[in-house]
Structure formats: structure tokens, C-alpha cells
Image (tube, rainbow, N blue to C red; front, top):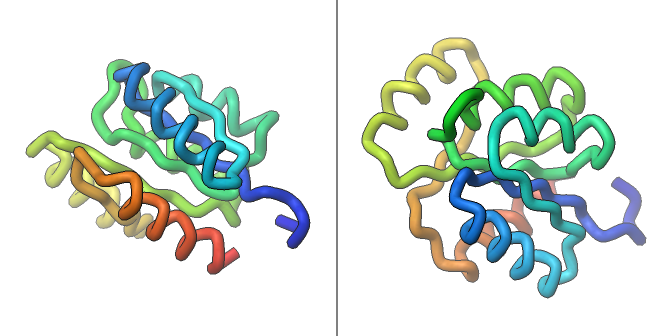
Length: 127
């Protein structure tokens, strides 16, 4: 990412209102944000949008956020990954992922926009 460009953030949640709201908040906070609504959409959008950060719900129908994140990292190794979930099943999925050495950070839903922006700022500063 060059210093003059806005950081690109891809937001994924099968609850469209959540994805759209987060993308709107991020756009208003000087990020270039796009919303998608499933894991397949994450991979497809990442191919052309090339996000600096992926923020994804973990549990989505079809491809999970974790599976999509792994595919995005294979395409874009510098992409930072922030996962979020409000479901208890997430712990089991993350154990499997961490066992495969991905070690994604998981945020609890709901997350206050101020807290999300702080995490995002940290992730983008690391690029």
C-alpha cells in the first residue's frame, strides 16, 4: 500500500445490514471499503479489489470466513485478517485454523465502531 492511497478494506458478513453499515463507517473514516455477503464473494472481490485488510464474519453459509481468509492470504500474503463472530461454534473453527498455523485474530460481535477502527488502524499501520 502506498502512503497516499486510502487503505482498502473488504468487509464480509452474511447479514447485509452489518456488512453495509461497517463499509459505510469505514468509508466515512477515510478507508476505501467494500462489502460482500458470503465467503465466495470475499475471494471473488479480493481478486480485483486487492484489500489491505479483510474483516470477515466467521460463520457464513457456504464458504466460512476462515476458509475465505485462507484463500485471500494465498492470493495476497500481505493482507491483514480480522475475523468477528457472535457464535460459540467459532472456537472450534478457530482451533482448527490455528492448528494450520494461520492464527487469525477474532473480535466478538457486536463490536463498537470505535473499537473496530482502533483495531483497523493498528492492522494498517503494520503494513
